[in-house]
Image (cartoon, rainbow, N blue to C red; front, side, top):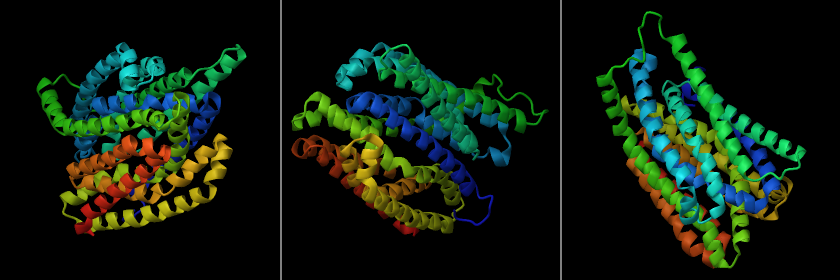
Length: 446
């Protein structure tokens, strides 16, 4: 992106992540259309309600550790210190797996209480018991993906993502047709079973990949990689935890607020005057139909964000302000251009796409309003990654918190007054706040 060399890791990595990201989103996009037609808007609403629990469990168990592993193994490509990288990977994996097993057991055992008192929808309890099984599997491939991101080999995380999506969708289709042939009525639980099967496929791919990686790159006379060196394990664990704990706490707080937001949207819609089924249906149309379409082009910026952080970190460590300046200016310029293009497309085709894809005029209306998010989202996401690369994690956390609080104001007071449109305007306002703050934060580098 910033240098013209063909072997620029940002260009190569971004292309790999973007292609697989688009392929994965393309599959997932039509998968959601299939689910929406099979289970309806209310079923999609119930399915979407379990997302906060998954997000919180990921934040608590492995989100911070994945970044920590990536940071500590980043020097492997230069130092060739495979033993240190293997120790950090195994230490991070054991720490995260311990947390993930406790989290999975807790969700499985207290699914009824979580469903009723946290999600405020008792019908999510059986779904929670199923997704609890996926948490340890997600931990395995997240830790391994963190290792490969650190050494800038994006092909493996991309393959994991794509295999997870293909196997998940394929398994749900297979279950659906099996039920149809036996005269059984499929339920939304089958979609959650597919999620677990997809996670298991991604876990297997990542395990095979990391084994093959060490077998291919480590010299034959290098000695054992995974030795029982307890002092080294403690040292690696301390280093990982020092970075992972604040990152995880930030993610937990952010995801907790996002969970409150997601859970209370149907609740506030009931306060506006809808019954429970209608409120869940509107929530399902918004989060399961309209928003995935709006986020679809974000595969490009998401890929850039993953790889910007280590490159900006390296430039900052070398005091290479010219590279940082180019990164910021190009992210703002191209993010704005991509966003304007997407906004124009969604404005012109929103109603048509809503009716064509989801047979829902409401989805079309949501797509048109949410289209204005695109330029703001694309600029903010890349600038957030740059700020994290510059070590400004406290700033990005504060900006995310402020943005969420703006949305929560609209959830609790906007929805009861204006219905779901009160929340849509809140989304636009909060994203504008975050984007402006990020641009203000990087002003001295421009």
